[in-house]
Length: 65
Image (cartoon, rainbow, N blue to C red):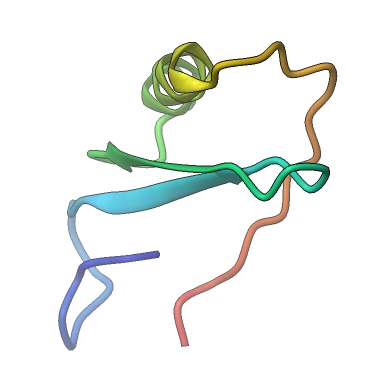
């Protein structure tokens, strides 16, 4: 989810959402930019919040409308 207001230019915070389809457990983590390093850190952070091990990942990316 982008938090860019009326313009998608420049740098702004986005929310990365991780959801476990088996349990419905959801974690939301802020990501400053879509830089791969920032995304990797956010994924590790979100995984650490889950009370169970995550066995795999599926990435679905949506563009702001």
